[in-house]
Image (cartoon, rainbow, N blue to C red; front, side, top):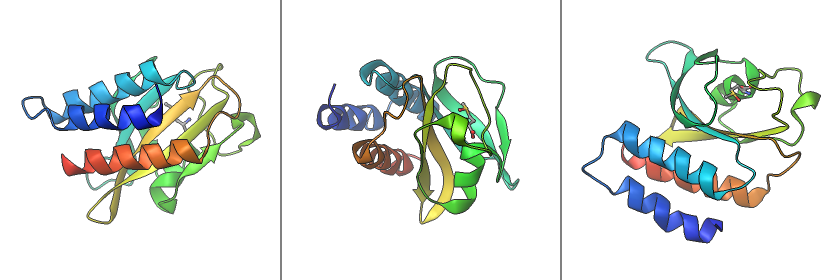
Length: 151
Ligand code: SME
């Protein structure tokens, strides 16, 4: 499904007021994983209270051992401190990378801001090499803006 068609579907999930926040985030992960062929794993990480670490939130895909990631470690930990999107076309070329599965070829992490503060991120793994474009970045920024509305 195209990003244009996915945007209203994301809004529909966000606006489902009967559902808990975690359930809505879970549904977004599942929607993206199901509808975007090269999204192999989709998950949210959030700052873990006052600690300088990320904690895994809702996700769709294989379970990961990396439920806690210290700031600065891996692609996710780097985004926690840089506040910038991180697009990795080839994970094997990254020194500071935490492997979750041997099948993953590429990754994109987009920070999630609430009132200007970087409070988490959406993380996508792909088994396809170099699949992400600026369209993915714009779409994932949109998803995070919508998610921020219900946090
Ligand atoms: N690869 C990530 C770790 C999280 S998993 O992809 C789910 C990283 O390097 O931060």
